[in-house]
Every structure is written in structure tokens, then in C-alpha cells.
Image 1 (tube, rainbow, N blue to C red):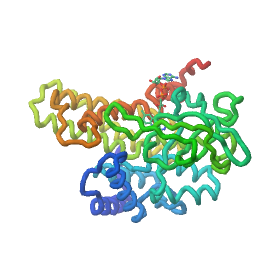
Image 2 (tube, rainbow, N blue to C red):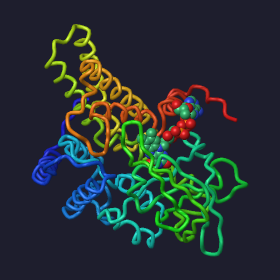
Image 3 (cartoon, rainbow, N blue to C red):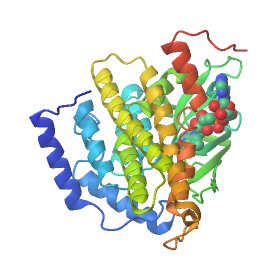
Image 4 (cartoon, rainbow, N blue to C red):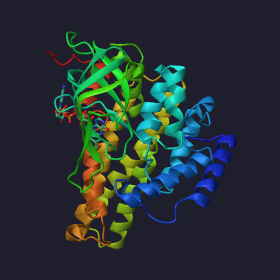
Length: 387
Ligand SMILES: Cc1cc2nc3c(=O)[nH]c(=O)nc-3n(C[C@H](O)[C@H](O)[C@H](O)COP(=O)(O)OP(=O)(O)OC[C@H]3O[C@@H](n4cnc5c(N)ncnc54)[C@H](O)[C@@H]3O)c2cc1C
């Protein structure tokens, strides 16, 4: 699509670019799960907050700038273009907070929203369990009502940011008799609640920001229910929809990943096969950017049926993996070299990005699940057999 930004949009881009360039961190941060890294990320988050840029896409009355989808895309592009740090509180900013803004009470908004914006509370998402990932409705963490409290028992896993988070939004089973999507509730809880145990998990690429979270008779106020009792599946749909969307600057990061490969190929004596593969990757990367703009337009017109986000997510993760694999091939054994000592013990950056990229085929709904959505909802093919 031939994209022409309006003069106001260009003005907004110039304003955002000027601020980010003037205020950007002067060095690369340590990982957020190290003491120094956490302090660096918090300092950056507070600088964004002080400038009113903590949550540009949120409504003004909630502390955002009330940007429309295109302005949000411009913001995300500028942020990604400068390779600025991943947002520490992205679970609160992208999923948890907006879900509370839609379904929460005024009291819940007053209590929880400010801490997300100034990062005095870091949020995490407690949906997945050891036997409930793609089949999320199979979750088994229970919450039983006792007086004006809910008593939680069970386990969550793959909790991103779990090791630094202070608050979790979670799905729990409040009616053990009900089947599947019924009888589930959406709750918010403080992670320092007695009976909640956070255990860090180290990943293949060396990062240890993930956690497993265990609940043993953990008591939280009944007032922490978001939406109605047993109606959490509907509330969770808001959160899950936000997780896919247009990718929050992924197209810009993909272009940068491709450019790094192109530069590497340019530095070496590339064979014709490598050049041909580079050409294909270039076309795919460009197509992904255009598809992101097309989806933004579709969502802005209110015409989104959720299928295009699935297509975009599948293609983004596949193209990213293909670029990383080609980069590793071009570098050969050099890819293993660690150029700078990394106190977190992580792999060299390219290998780390490659492995993290592989996770892109799993989180926010795996590739197979997205393909089911595309075939059933988009192409009208028969539904897969379900028990
Ligand atoms: C980097 C990362 C961050 C994450 N962060 C969080 C987080 O913060 N909070 C949270 O709650 N969860 C998080 N997750 C968990 C994530 O949501 C799950 O891993 C994902 O939903 C897949 O579930 P699973 O791992 O249980 O795999 P499974 O659901 O067991 O799937 C295993 C394999 O079977 C395939 N499969 C499953 N069902 C079908 C089907 N019906 N048809 C065809 N194939 C199928 C899947 O595609 C996959 O290949 C994260 C995961 C990753 C990798």
C-alpha cells in the first residue's frame, strides 16, 4: 500500500523523534533481572513517565496521550528505530492495564493504574500452566470464596517478568464443576501475598527473567476480581486481543534485523546463493511492513476480524527466524564468539536473538494455533475435531 502520512502525523513523528533522540539512554542496559539492569530500566521508565510518554496509546483520562492507531504506530516505529530498551512494564501497559480500564471498577482503576504508569508496580501475566497453554481453558489453579476473600491454590508457568513483577493478572478456576471456558475468573494479585512463591527459571539462551509461580492457600480480596465471578474468559479475551494486534513496532525491528544481515553479507564474499536468499528475505521483510500498515488501516476502520493479526504473527516469526538462520550461516563459527563479556552469562547477541526469536513461534499463541484460526475463521475450512 502506498502510505502517505498526513502533515500532522509527520509533525508528531518529528516531535517524538526529537524527544527520544535527546533523552535516549547513552549506553546499553544490563538485563532487567540483574540488580543494575533493573535500576537502569526503572530510571528510563520514570523518565518516559515524567514526559507523559509512559503509555502514549492510553486514553488521556487514564494518563495516556489518547493517540489514534496511526499515531501509536508512529510512536512504536520511532521507539524501535532507535533500538530503545524493551518496556519493563509491557505486561501492565499492553495487556493488564488496558483490560482493567475496560472491565475494572473505578476503585480498581484508582488503585492499580497509577502504579503501572510510573512503574512503581511491575505487572506480569499468569495465564499459562504446565498443562494449559494452547488449551488455556484447561487451567487448574483454583480460587475458592471464603468470606470476602479468594483462596488460591495451583501453579502458573512461563511468567515473563515474573522475577521482578510485583503484581499479576491471572485466570483462576472459581467453579470447579463448570467445564472449559465457564467457571473461570480474572483476578489481580500482589505477588508478596503470603502463600505466593515465585521461582525463577533460566532459559536456553541464558536469560532468567521468567518464573514459575506457586499458590498455596494464598488469600486475596474478593474485590480483586475483574469483571464478574466465573466470567473471566470474556475479560481475558480483551487481554488476548491486545497481545496480537499490529505488533507494536515489530515491522521496524524486523527491518533492522534484516539490515544487519545485509551489512554482514556486504562485508563478506557472498556466493550467488546467499545473494538470492538475501533478495527473498528483503522482499518478505518489505511485505511484512506493508501488511502491518494494511492491518493498521483495517483495525482503524473497525473492519478487523482477528484473522489478519494471526497471519501477521505467523509471518513475522517465520521471517525473523529465517533472517537469523541466514545470519548464522553467513557468520559460520564466528557466530559463537562472545565479543563483550556478559555478566548475565547470556549467549552472544545473535545466538540469543535467534533463540528468543524461536520463542516468537510459541508465545501469544503458537504458529499451529494461529494456522487453525486462519484456516477455520479466515478460509472457512472445517473445524479441527475437538473432544
Ligand atoms: C517467550 C515466552 C513468553 C511467555 N510469556 C508468558 C507469560 O508472561 N504469561 C503466560 O501466561 N504465558 C506465557 N507464555 C506461555 C505461552 O502462552 C505458551 O507457551 C503457549 O500458549 C503454548 O502453550 P504450551 O507451551 O503449553 O504448549 P502446548 O499448548 O502444549 O503446545 C505444544 C505444541 O503443540 C501444538 N498444538 C497445541 N494445540 C494444538 C492444536 N489444537 N492444533 C495443532 N497444534 C497444536 C502447539 O502449537 C505446540 O507446537 C510464554 C511463552 C514463551 C515462549
